[in-house]
Amino acid sequence: MRAILLAMAALGLAALPVSAAEPQIVIKFSHVAAPQAHKSLASEHFKKLAEAYTQGRVRIELYPNSQLYKDKEELEALQLGAVQMLAPSVSKFGPLGIKAFEVFDLPYIFAGYDELAKVTEGDVGRELLGKLESKGLIGLAYWNNGFKILSANSQLLGPDDVLGLKMRIQASKVIEAQMWALGALPQVMAFSEAYQALSSGVVDGTENTPANMYNQKMFEVQKHATLTNHGYLGYAVISNAKFWKGLPPDIRAALERAIAETTPVANKLARDENETAMAEMKASGRTVFHEPTPEEIAAWRAALLPVHDEMANRVGRDLIDRIYAATGHKPATQ
Image (cartoon, rainbow, N blue to C red):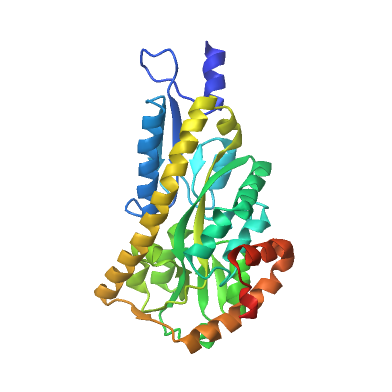
């Protein structure tokens, strides 16, 4: 019996003191978003469906807001089996060794959600998720956050205004190249550390979606923001491959159904939250939000689009071209 229990523990299975012959499967789902954020709400929706579809044979334990691990630590924890599910930013897979995922970080590669969906819900998106298995992970779905804006304590009317600013970024060579292209000084740091760094002046500004800017209270310590919508921020829902493949087939199918049904809900929650967050931040008066003119957007694009060619060797020229084909346009020529 002891050997059986140890084997179950290695797979992330936990037997509860219930009369059922089959032990309940416990899935720890960790993420870095605030409890009120759309990722948290989507995770709760998934929990509800997963537990219902498995008729209580699975229990989902949610750990938001870096309760268990910071974003730099969570992938290692998943690979080691300390948790069973995550929803990290797709940018996190570049430092893990799957550089192709950093294609999502290329500035202005998607003109909006419709173009994005042609990739995340198409062949390219599925192939990228498949690459995760080489790192002991299973990719289950993409959940959107939104499109990023730039913020700082000084006006950012054009690329020249970013020159020399220390800008907090997540770990991504593409985002780093983007900041260098603007003449900024990129500073990689954990999401949970961004507010304090902005508040103390360790960094001057950052890029993020309105939802993240609001939930992490960054708008309280940033006087200006420009609605560049220059880059996409999204998540991949993933699991430990050994754990996922070790699940009973019917349980795995039920969880996949729950993920599939949660994904459109998650994406709608994200769009709604970004709209609400922007309205709340504008109403607070703490940050002045600038809507760029067409001429200003053209200047931002001219400064940032060369990053596509600069990073082609890193993320894959063919992959970039396939995304151009899937979305129906080549941003670098516009």
